[in-house]
Amino acid sequence: MINAKRKISVLHIATLNRPIRRDLGYGPIETVIYNIDKGLHKLGHRSIVACAADSHVAGEHYTTIKKSASEYWSENTPAQRKDMKRHLALSLQRAKAGDIDIIHMHDATMMEYIYKGVFKSPVPVVMTLHVPAEDKGSFKEWHESLLSSSAAYFIPISEYQKKQHRGLVNAQQVIHHGIDVADYPFKKRPVKAGYLFSISRITPDKGQHKAIQVTKKTGSRLILAGNVQNKAGDRAFFDKLRKSIDLIVDKRPPYSGGDYYKEVMKPILDSKKQIIYIGEVDNHEKKLWYRHARATLFPIQWGEPFGLVLIESMACGTPVLAFHKGSVPEIVIHKKTGFVLRSMNAMVQAVKSIGCIDPSDCRKHVSENFSIASMAGKYAALYESILNRRNLCLKTSR
Image (cartoon, rainbow, N blue to C red):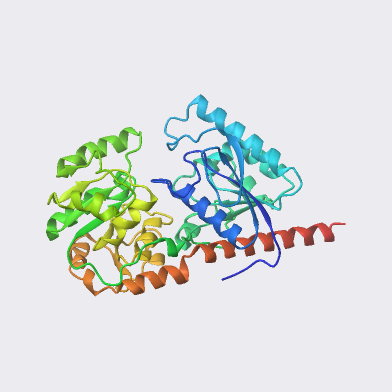
């Protein structure tokens, strides 16, 4: 693990889509912000998160608006734009207080509102590139300015993404996402019988239709989890998908806080239906669905920059069957922590070999390569190198 030598004060300008908190259902960027904040705080750095009031962070909470949108920007309404402008104005105001070493941004959408402020900021700005390279809208108008700016430092989240962004922004070192592995329940032995698991936003790019095909061709069972966003394309996709779903769990069995498997999971699994959709699950619930699964299917149809699903599943000892797209080959070790596959037929065949994967290898791989401590340590070291370069430039310019 890499550690910075001094205590650094970081202001995270968070997204407004969902709150920054541990118990999220869907919210990949928000989950990463939560984890970076938690990791930096544990390392002894000062982590301040500018976000909505309904967030719960490990470091300092700087409130900019009352409530997060609870939905990813699909309409870009005047109210949303007003909230964004207020959020950014207050965040930049906080950054000027004199006690902030680094501004860390996490939402490319903000560039529309903030890019001029970035160049005027006396505080160095880091932006994690959560967005795919294909989504160049947030950078298109300003990428030449970004390339020439010494104030902005862009962090790809995978080698794949760094290659995709080459020539678009001045991408610095790759820092993979990390999770708190100790928070994930671990199974010591492979699950010989049981279900396949698929958890993602319900959209064609995530390939739930492919997961259903694999399930039917192998005679397996499938638990589908994920939210359907308020987008016409996603809703239409789910309408088609539901024709292949045998059971939609509109309301899960009541949970008293005791044995989740016994109270919630078992009644659903006892239905004996083959394809079951359980809707969006929260952070606690998804870990248990991972743990009891034979494997997690990740049949993505696009080059995803980094799939948190991959490391979350492996942390529970559950192997991943994923298509060879995007960052998948960087994250999953073929035939050791899962299978990296190039076709539907290959994925169907791989289902037969799930039992050959040792859960301990999956867990160890995540612990050694994708932990919160590792991720936070790399960010802290990067912050320090940026500050050292900035100080050196100031000295030589005098």
